[in-house]
Every structure is written in C-alpha cells, then in structure tokens.
Length: 425
Image (cartoon, rainbow, N blue to C red):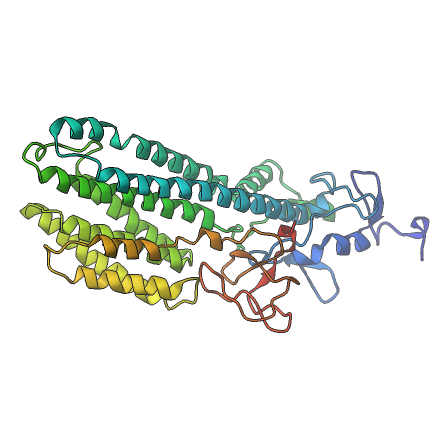
C-alpha cells in the first residue's frame, strides 16, 4: 500500500473534506456512490450524468473516518451525490408528515359527514327552528375547507423538496459559469440534477393528490347535505322559499363538477388510477343528486350534461379498475353501480342505502402510502412503498395506488423497481 507522499496528485487527486480528513478521489468516489449519479466510459472515466429519476439514494455521503456528512460546496466534486441524498431525505419527511396530516384531516371530514347526518333529522319544520339552525349549519364545514386549502398550499409543487432543490441549483448555476479551464472538481460541482434531456426529478405526488381527493370528498359531503336540506325546506310551506347560505346549488355544483373532472384527468396523467376512479364516482353521485333535486327546465338541461359527462368518466374509470391496485374490484363494483343509477328515470332518488354502499366503497386509500418501518422501494411509477419482514420481496406484489409491480421472486426486485434504502431510517 502506498503512502500519500508517494502519490502523484496530478494523476491521482487528493480530496480534502470539510472535517479535515483526506482521501484519494479514486477511493472516495466509490465510497460516496459516484457511479450512481454519473456514467463512465470503458476507461472508467466519468462521461455524463446518469438518470436518477427512478431510484433513491442509498445513503447520505459521509467521511469514512469520522462519519460526518460531507458538506456541499466544500467539496464540490460530490455536489450531485449530496444533492440527491439530501433531496431524498427531505422527500421521505415530506411523505411521512403529509400522510400524518392527511389522516387527521380525513378524520375531521368523517366527523363532518356524521354530524350532518345526525343533525339533519333534528331540524323541525318550524320556521323559527330552521332559521336558527340553518344560519350556523355550515360554519364548521367552512373552517374545514380552509384547513384543507391550507394543507394543499403547504404541499403544492413549489414546496416539494425536489422542486426546491432544483430551483436552488438553477439559481446557483445562473450566478457562476464554469470556464473550460476549470478543474474536474469544479466541472463536476457545476453539474445540476437537470441537464439537457434529463428532466428534473419528480417526486411522489400522492400526498398532494390525496389532499385534492379529500377536498373533493369534503365538498361532495357539503353538496349532498345542501341537496337534502333543500328538499327538506321545500317540503314545508313555511320554509319552501328559504335559501341556504354559501351560494346557490347550481353554481356550487358547476364548480364542483369542474374540479372533479380536472382531478380525474390529473390522476390519470400521474398514474394514480385508484384516485381517478374515486373522482369519477364523486362526479357521478352528485350528477344524479343534482338531476333528482326537482329542477326547472334550464337546470334539467345542465343536469343532462352532467349525467352524460358522468357516464363518460365512469366508463373510463371502469377500465382503470382493471389495474391491480388495492381494492380495485370493490371500486369497480362501485363504478358499475353508479352507471346503473345514472340509467334510471329522472324522478328516482338515490336511496340512503345506495349512498351508504357507495361511500363504503370509497376507501380513499391514503393508508396505501406506506410509511412504516421496513425496507423502502419505488414501484415502476415512482411511488415509494415498504414491504417484507426481511426487506426483499418474497413474492410478486403490487403498488396499492397504481397496481404497478413492486416486488419480485427469490429476493430479486422486478424490472422497474428500485430499493429506497435511505427511507428505511
């Protein structure tokens, strides 16, 4: 073994870390995982950037001697490796914290729904009683809607760890241009995660879409209650002309349907068929509620448009349910039931039992975002998941959100699946 005094630093560069320890670039490159982010030629020299979009960093680069993290920009040679590891750690925290917040909000949405159902029968048909209770009926729902909107803002794309890091790199790159005479370390340090034909790394967006489907669910519960309350008010001469707070049902329904259809389209693009199918069911349920709510001529025309659009979305959702995601068959039956309901006559209501069955099938699946302890992987569509007692898949499994392969036989991951070691914390 050679001593450092015997090394020609022109041929074998020495890298000094921020902690003061130093190593040959050749040995440290292998320890920090340079081969995971750069491609090499036949001579073993770095030739370009590796596509890191389908895998996660195996570790945060550390000094082999003292185990202190290697700092960015102190040793620019490893910036790409460090950036990737930092981003993946941030993504893990983003995912886990997002899931926790979603679960809390879901509980509040469920409480809102049960509260509406219980209080609906308590409202007597006297004008004084109705006025007093209607005035405050939707205060809590407004608060909850604001909380969901705040959550969606907090998990918007601009707050995603990958986006933040990408923007920071672009900003730094715009303020420093590496000339042709710069060192290899400077050249490697200047390379960003995004270059030419390699897109910025898009991380898991299920938390964001989980928030959007929860918003649709809350709005759907509110609309359903307003349809039910409108019928109750119309049933008594003393309250038939009374208006519910929050705007007329026509405008509320129009805004809801637009948001619902947009969400379904986005879910299809993001390869989230389960959430797409759920969005179609919310659209269809409210289309029928609107149609059977006792409408005037013009409103009936609008209702016809909603019903036809709902049939189109349900047909698409039925095909999406062929994907082997979690509860696919249950959701497919729910889609089929909604198709049958929309085929009825105008005057036929959706019964309370039918609504209960539909809601029972609408398991929104945020529990599918696995964040428990164990070994972490990405499915072929980039959704992190945790499986297995020993860490590697013993049998074929499927992503609970999209149905893509997430495991393999004989402790070998199937094609398109990568292990997400840094998320095993």
